[in-house]
Amino acid sequence: MININGNLVEVDKASLEIGNRGYTYGDALFETIRVNAGKILFWEDHYFRMMASMRILRMQIPLQFTPEFLEKEILEIINANDLINSSARVKFMVNRVSGGFYTPISNDVEYLIAASSLDSGFYSISAEPYEVVLYKDHYIAADLLSTLKSNNKIVNVLGSIFAEENNFDNSLLMNSNKMIIEALNGNLFLVKNNVIKTPPVFDGCLKGVLRTQLLRILKELPDYQLEEASISPFELQKADELFITNVIIGIQPISKFRKKEYDHKVSKRLLGILNTKIRLGN
Image 1 (cartoon, rainbow, N blue to C red):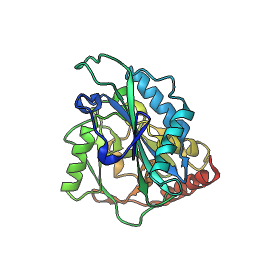
Image 2 (cartoon, rainbow, N blue to C red):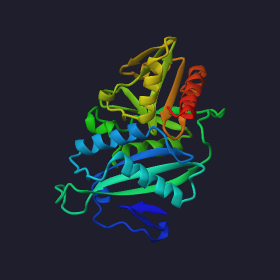
Image 3 (cartoon, rainbow, N blue to C red):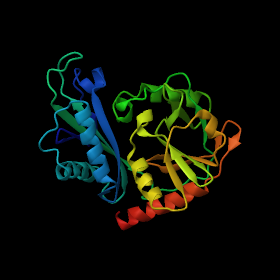
Image 4 (cartoon, helix red, strand yellow):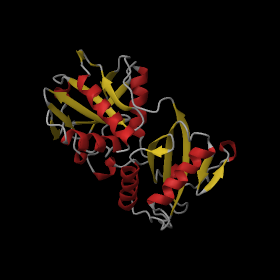
């Protein structure tokens, strides 16, 4: 089952209007959300990011789009797919209504919510090696639009194909200033001694929800010095650790980039703290 504008529809009976602006122009936003046993993780951060993104794209936010209404809609699709007692990935998409060419005839929106199952209720770190490559065929603009989870993800798609064709687990993306900004599917963190760096939002990286959680955690840990600062490709091979974050996988340590192999002690510690916060409902 999926939720289309508040109506539950069987997946094989769902249809997409040919003029859907998310399809024809990429005029859409989405949130990827993790739900554990009926609890939406980091819901407040997801909600406010979506609302801020809709404002940036000049979409008309419906009056009923309160946190309570959208939470109810998400949990309804979780229940409809018998996922209330397990872990699930939810994709919440908002697009401007059909009509017009580049200029829309209306800024009103419609929405779709889909859910699928996940294997584990808490985050864990795999012992499998995880090697990344620098993707240099195309670059991300260092501007506000690049920080949004919009449907325009063609660089991520091409970077994924490049990684797969060359037997890498992920690609690291750069902005037009040749600074590292993120991985294909999450934010990047770099550890060197007691300094933990992550690219700043103004470099064009996604304003990730789990990135936000880790920034809050790190500000409370006196052992580390947190920096939101640009990361050059040269810095990657001098780092002690590199890891990727998103709300579905949690923390993914990078084991190798080029000839450099990395530790994952800090990744493990942060993951333990993150799981504790989830258990306590923080």
